[in-house]
Image (cartoon, rainbow, N blue to C red; front, side):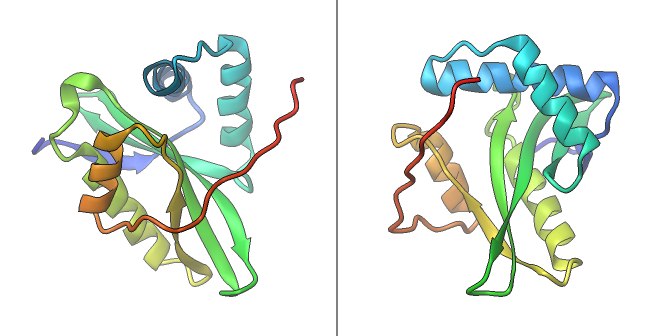
Length: 156
């Protein structure tokens, strides 16, 4: 466990944006073998940072180095009359894995959500073959559901 790890909401500053772009590109490559367009990812990170209604990032730092992050977007649940935080783009630098970084990010998020009256829970999706990530999510108390995700994406 990293003792000097600090967790905060990501900020619209060059260092956070650059790191988040690198993390997103590394995540896509590691989990899906996809090479993303850096300009597109950069615009995506910048857009979220400038539009809090879309969501926010949470980052983990040690010794002035961002070593992990996650993104949260929102889903309104009419069944629960509340917001569900969708946890996405989870990334921890390889040399910092298995040291409690994700757990600390998740605990920070739980604390933040507990102070917001309209937040009712968390969801995330994970690659079927990413067993390490699934194990990590289970260790913090998340449960696998019976839902499958369907999508239709538009190329722009």
